[in-house]
Image (cartoon, rainbow, N blue to C red):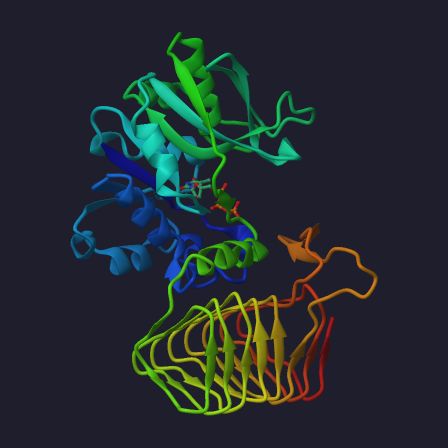
Length: 396
Ligand code: TTP
C-alpha cells in the first residue's frame, strides 16, 4: 500500500523558523519531522511514498532523493499553490491506484497507528484523538463503528474526537475532491470531501489514537515533540569525550564532536556532528543540538532545539527555546523561560498573541540572529531571522 504525505504547506504559524525551510524539515531529535513519519510508516510495512510538496520543495527532494537510502521508493508531486489539504491529496491522483494511506507531514505518530489503519476493511478509515478542546480541529461524529459526520472547527463541538490527519482512502475520494467547493477560507478541505464520501453511502470507519500523536503547528510544539523523541533514544558516542567530562543517562555524541573537560551532560541529549562542547558547560535533559554547534564555557542549556552552525560561546543560560541555524550568542546572553506570576506564556503567532499553555518557554529564534553581549531575552519572545541585538539590550 502506498502512503501519500502532505508536505506542501507554508507553515506560517511556525515563522520565523520556516523562513528558510519547510515546516516538515524542522528538526526534532536532530532528524526532520518528515523523516520520523517516513521511518514510522516503513516500520508499519509501507515501502512506497508519494510526497506532495510545494513551499521550498527542493530541500525535501535533496534530503530524501528517490528513497533508495532507506530502501523505499519516493515520488514527488508538486502542489504549486497551497489550496488546501483536499487539493493537495488530489494532486497525487495519478500516483496511486488501489486504497492508500494519507499522512499529514507535520505530526509525530507511531508505526502501530499506521499499521492499524492498513489492516482495516472499510472503504475509508479516519483517525481521531480525544482532546479537551476540539474547536480548532475537524471534529468527528460517530454512530457505532462508523463516522456519520465530520465538521471543521465547530464552535460547539459535538464530540471531543479531533481529526488526527491520517486516513485510509479508496480511489473514489478523488471524484469527491474534484467536486468539493472552496471553503469560506478559500481552500479545498479534505474534511468536505470526506463528508461527500460519507453521504455517497461509503462505509467510513474510525480509529481512536491512544498512543502518541503530536500535531506540530506552532513553534513550541517542536519542544513537545523533541522531548518525546529524545526520551526514546539510546545513547551512542561516535565523537571524542575528554576524561573529565561527565555524561549521564542517554547521550548521543556525533562523529567529529569533542566534549571537553568539565562539560556535564544529563541525557536524554543528542549532539550532532563536528560540535565543540565545553569546557565547563551544563547541558540538561531534552536538548537536541545540531551539527557544527559550539556550546562554550559556563553555558547552561536545557530543553532546547539548537539548529546547525550556531554558537553559544560563553556565559549564557538558554532554556525551553528553539534556536535557528547560524545564530551567534554574545557572551552573557540570557533567556528568561519562566513567568514569576505562574501564568502561561503568550507568544506572537501570525501577528496575534497566542497562549502557548506553557509555564516555561524561552525564545523562538530565527536563523542568523546575533545577540550583543549581556542581551536579556524575555519569556516567549520571537526574534526574526537576521535580527541583531545591541550590547546589554533587553528584548521584551
Ligand atoms: P496546515 O498545518 O493546516 O498548514 P501549513 O502546514 O501550511 O501551516 P500553517 O497553517 O502554519 O500555515 O497543514 C496540514 C498539513 O497539510 C501539513 O503537513 C501541510 C499540508 N498541506 C499541504 O500539503 N497543502 C496545502 O495546501 C495545505 C493547506 C496543507
